[in-house]
Image: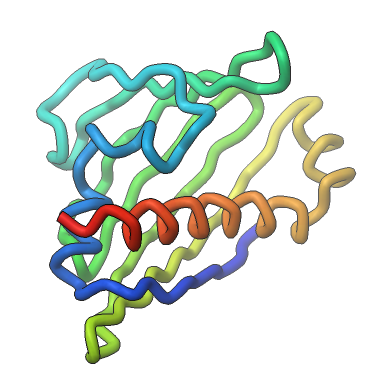
Length: 148
């Protein structure tokens, strides 16, 4: 399953990238993030691995392993996210629109295995796109209210 999403942010490119690229800000726009911890490599460098734990529902948790593939912001940030039954390839790009505005574009591709194939079928592509756009909007709201 592959799809594209984008959102325009009312801040200049350099400010958006600075906010997006700072892991200290993750919990400010990802409210279900419980923890962020380095597994290996150097933060922000290709090949580095990070463990992300998110709250799911009242008592559930989702653990993902992020592997950074390419870090060349604003042009490109490539990463994979692995969770049980799910492999997500994510490409993020930031574009200067002029007049103090920036467009965040994402290309997202999911591959599913096991029971996650059934879950993905039931949620459908639109369900996954909606979830991605929710995080785009959360980041936009955070960034526009916290210009550093």
